[in-house]
Every structure is written in structure tokens, then in C-alpha cells.
Image (cartoon, rainbow, N blue to C red; front, side, top):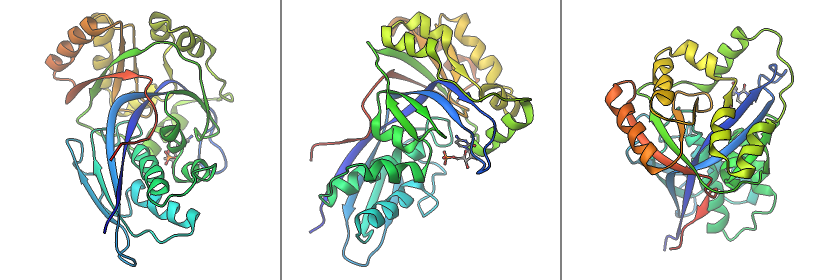
Length: 301
Ligand code: C5P
């Protein structure tokens, strides 16, 4: 009989993303403050008969264009988990996709993290440090999707340490009808930036999340990939401008974009801004989310 495990996994925002000069391996050193927010994919992993290999199905409102083969990080995660635990990857993976693809919210990395955690649970393996190591090899954002909460990310983003935070922050997310491939945005960063200094952790952002001060966080939000993302997709400029016009405490392109995140005081402010964003015609959809939330979590059967 087939057994299965379901894992809920959050999207991420980068409250601060500081990028250093391109490394010899093509990646960029980062000092980033991640926050996991309440926009979730749900990933189910079920056992298959020996020798059947991997099967992948993607459904849900953000599933359009998401690959159902080995091009999907979730598929690669099942292979990597099997190799790490000395098993065969005979699993059926089903993804309920709610995190926009190629949107700067690490949706693909989230699904990979969910598969890693689900495989360990399904096979009764002790996650230990194995999963975090495997996660970092699959993608820079995968270790954070396992951890969740708010965290400082260094290296190329794969080295994560939890950050103290107080309270809950309220976000309004504007989803784009366009996608931005992360490597393209980093290339634009290389083209736009002159001399680039090594990145340093953003003390103002860490202080604001530690004290639960939304106004201070709004003023401190920072993203070195914002200018390159705007150079590729100039329509993000007028979209971001709607934040201050409608009471947002701060706004930022999420990661490599094109999703834009607006920090607001509470429910009433979120509603006003969500209406304005929807009416503007400058984005495809608007979602609300809160952070921080836990990382990839096994759901009760
Ligand atoms: O690790 P991930 O799969 O998210 O990286 C996707 C691409 O983004 C990399 O191939 C690289 O071009 C770029 N990247 C980078 N520096 C990072 C993370 C990603 O240049 N720290």
C-alpha cells in the first residue's frame, strides 16, 4: 500500500538583500535578511512501487508554466534526498502551487525544501544536518525554506542563522504578469554596478525586526537587486510608487522580482492598499500575507 506525507512550505521575502561582487563560481556573496510569509505551497510525497521512479504533478492557481519533469527543483530534491539516505527515489510528488513561479519569492526552492522534509519523514530517516547540506546544494534559498521564521543569510544565501523577531508584520503582495529569471537579474546587477563592496548584514533591519517596529522596518527595507529588476521591468516603478500614496510603511521588490511587497500597519491599511493596487492595472493579482511563519512543516495525516 502507498504511504504519503504532506508538507506545507512558505514563500520568502528578503527584508534586506545586499549583494557583493560576482564570485569565480558565478554566484554572488550575499548578506540578506529573509522572512517566511504566509503564502504557502502544499507538497505531498507518496511512495511508489520499487523501480517506478519519480512522478510529478503540479496543480493549483500558480501552476501555469511550472515544469512537471526533472527541470523542477522538487524532482531534483527527491533524487538528492534518495542519494543522501541511500534509497531509490520511487515517489509520486504532487504540488499545490500558490507561490508565484519566477516571482522572487523562492517558490521553486520552497517545493524542493518540502520534498526533502517529506522524504525524510516518509522513509523514517533522521534529518540531522544531512538535509541542510543537501538543501544548500539544490539552491541558495532552500535551507531557509526548511528553517523559516526570520533569518540572516550569508554565503550565496544558503548559510542561515535564525534572527530574533517580535510580533507579526503585515504584507500586501503585488504579483506580476511577467516573470524574471534570477540569473538575468544578477547579470543586470553586474552591468549596472561599478565597484562593489563585500556585503554586510543590515543592522537597521535586524534591529527593527527584533523590536517589532514596523515603521522602522518599512524605512529600512533594502534590495540591491531592485534597480536591476527595474531596469528589466520599468513598470515596477509606478507600481512601487503606489505604496507611499496609499499609506504603506515601506515597499520593495521581492528578491530578484518581479513580485513587489508592501509593508503595512494592519488590516485596514492592507485593505486600502490592496484595493488601490488591484485598481491600478499595474499588477496581475494581489495577495495578503503575514510574517514570520515557520518553515516547511509536516501536516498531520
Ligand atoms: O541558487 P539558485 O538556484 O537560486 O541560483 C539561481 C541563479 O541565480 C544562479 O545560477 C546565479 O546565476 C544566480 N545567483 C547568484 N548569486 C546568488 C544566488 C543566485 O548569482 N547568491
